[in-house]
Image (tube, rainbow, N blue to C red; front, side, top):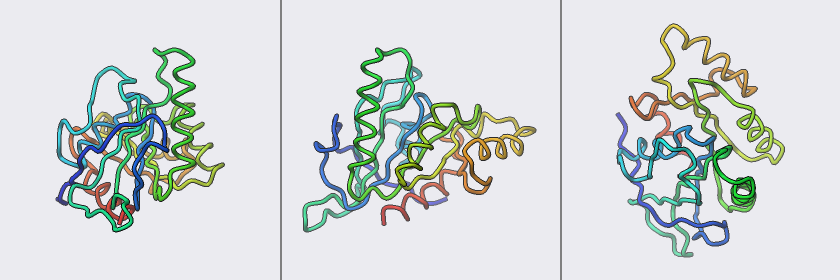
Length: 202
């Protein structure tokens, strides 16, 4: 088992310009209630680092975390960071607020310097939704680096795992091996994801 990625919370902001610069950053994006905050907690082995809730839509700002064991650079940039973005598609808010979140997320993804990878979380139990596919199309049209991580792997019945993996990959226009499967609850795939994150921010 690989060592947890030691993360510590830096700050929350509502615009990319209000964030401290980072030498290398990985962002986590996905539909509301797909498990973004749970995944941050899993890779760091800290249950309460990122706030989790059964109520979707609780993450409403850009939440920045830094590597606790990283050294800041002489140019003042944080050495390596992870960004937890608000979930998209949360219906129980006003249309105007959802539009504001979309603008905030898109501005961040387009303007953040040294963003080395965008982790797109897709619910492994239900597969990519229309909103997930729209996000993937947008990322691809803007040639932004991204990797699909399927969450909630433990909720997929053993008898359906092979078919679910094929269907989810096909729904994202990917090969089966291109999707990383994880379970924040059981720990499945977390080690592999830690290794990938370390590579992306090294």
